[in-house]
Length: 127
Image (tube, rainbow, N blue to C red; front, side, top):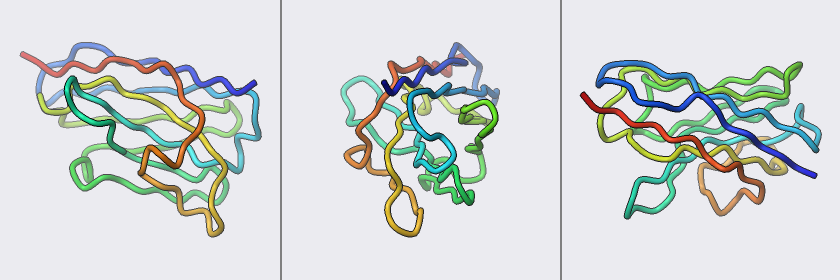
């Protein structure tokens, strides 16, 4: 049974940092697409970053490039999202997702490409 458990969210001031973690189980973590997504109230879910856990390939949404970093630890079956220089507009529920990688291992940022989801962790950026 696939399980994804997010942690690390919270309240942070603008300009601050948070590191989200997603602990995975129930599948072969070392050759999987793992993605971070977010959804703010009244908005659609959007892709933030994705990583192929095999030969590491990463993708980022333009609005987080240079601020967020996705990484993974295959020994711990965990993917991380380091978020720096946070802005109020980054406030959202952040979700971790997983699915089988496409040929070539370039993971999608489209939420519809992922079938397995965690419950989410809230990130609030406010002074």
